[in-house]
Structures are given as C-alpha cells and as structure tokens.
Length: 248
Image 1 (cartoon, rainbow, N blue to C red):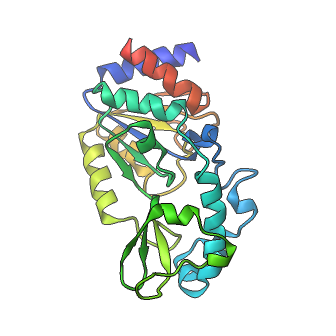
Image 2 (cartoon, rainbow, N blue to C red):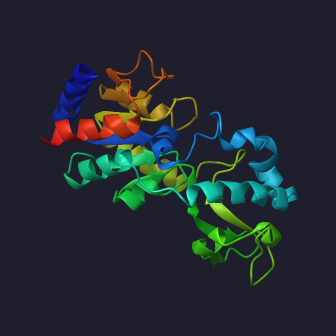
C-alpha cells in the first residue's frame, strides 16, 4: 500500500483542484453496511417494493417500514477516520469539495463544508402534499405505530429528501457536481464501485479532460483501467494515510 500511497499523494499535491467522490464504502466503518452487501438492507427489503417513487405513492406504510430500518442504522452512526480525513484536506485547502452518493450526513458531521449530496439526505423531510418541512429529529422517534409519517397540517405523507429509484437526481446536485468536476484536475474516488450512474461519470469526465483519478477501493471496481493509481485498502485506513502524506 505504501507505494500506491506515495504515488497518490504526489498526484494530489501536484493537482490544482481536487474533488472527492464517495460511496457506501466510506461509511462502512461507521456501522452502515452497503445496502447491497451481506447484512445490508436489501437482504431484508426488496428495493423495488420499498425504494421506488411508485411504492412511496401507493404503499407509503411499506416504504416507511424500510425507512425506520434505515434510520435505526444511520441514527447510531458517527463519522469515522475516512470522513475526518476528507474534512482535514478541505480545511487545509487541498480539497475543493465532496460529491457523495451517501445519504447519512456523516461528511458534514465530520466537518466537511462543501458537500454535494447526489442522492439526497435522511436529514431533511417534507410533506408530499403541502411541501411543509418537518423536523428531522422527529423521524428518529417514530415507531411502527406512527407510520407512514403524516403531515401535521394537511395529513399528507411526509417523505425524506432522498432520491428513490425512478426519481431524477436533483438539478441543484447535478449543477453543483458538474461545476466541481469542471474545475477539478484530480478526483479521489473512495468507497464506490462506480456502477451507479450518473455519479460514476464524474471521474471519466475529469480523466477525459486530462485530469487524474486516485481510487481507494478494497475490491476492483468499474474504474479499473481508468484510475491512475488504486489504493487497495478500506477507506477508513487509506484516506487518513493519504491525508497525512499530502499534508506532511
């Protein structure tokens, strides 16, 4: 790992503008398994029944049963060294921002400021009927007898600000991520397989413009052949080590 770390640190140091793209692997050490991995939520819930726009409209109680499960996991999670390493790099002026596919809010909890939540967040809720914003802390207190969560004003179903299957990526997230990618000449990809579009296109866009791709993934990903260097280690080990090298 040392040789790859030295090479990666050199690429990051020489870059004029560095962007990070993160996925589920960054939060595993915080106790949030990848939904698709053994022990993940898709073992207990069929995503086509609980995580689509259609299911939310037709069977909100079923969707909210899944959300309670997700909230129980996310509510216990705290930032791990991978999150804090990226916050350190940003604070030192070596990282322009983070585009994350995660919905757990752990980058912000670790101190990162410029975070684009590509798939939304479990920290924001609003009524599907009247649009009223609801207190996110109330979601953590919900029980099976409270679901689906109903709006106190109009009785409509309250939903989290996350992107369900069948929904479009918010234009704001698309715009901000595009601006960050356009300015970047280096992207650090961590904890994502590179299989989910359109976030997976960002490294390819930067590479096509002559930039470099630093990959941190324990297993091979869809970025094989694209990455200039791959650190084959968990994000919570590799990212702090990379930050130490870059900032030393």
